[in-house]
Image (tube, rainbow, N blue to C red; front, side, top):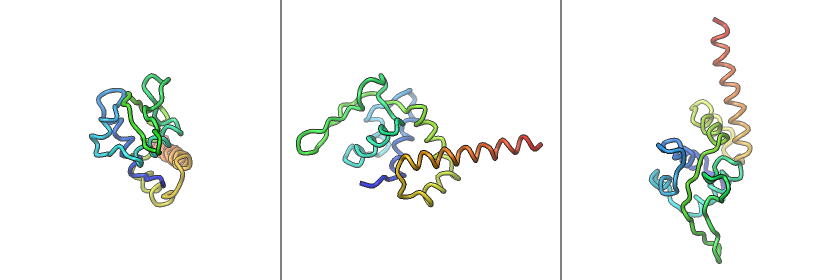
Length: 134
C-alpha cells in the first residue's frame, strides 16, 4: 500500500481539533475516516515515526492482528507526540504542503519528515530575517 499524504494529514489534524490532549479512535472516525486496512497502515507508519503513541506511553495503539490477517481495534487514548506536532505544523503551512505534494508525492514518511523539517526551518529563517533587517 502506498502512503496517502492527504489521508495522513487528515488523521494528524484530527488530533489538533480535539479539545483534549488525546483522541480516541472514535474521534478520528468523526473526521470521516473509516477504520480499515488503509487506516491501520497509516497509523502504523505514524507510530513507526513516533508521531503518535498511546497516552500512557506504555501500551500499543490498540490494534490486534487476528488469524487471516484481519484486525480488531480496541480503543485507547492516543496522543500526538512533540515530533508529530512539529511535522503537522510544517505540513499545515500551505507553502510547505504544496512543495511536498509536488516534489515528494511518492516519498516515504521518513523523507517527508526530513523535507518538511528542512522547509520549515528555511521558512522560519526567512521570517526571522524580515525582523532583523528592519
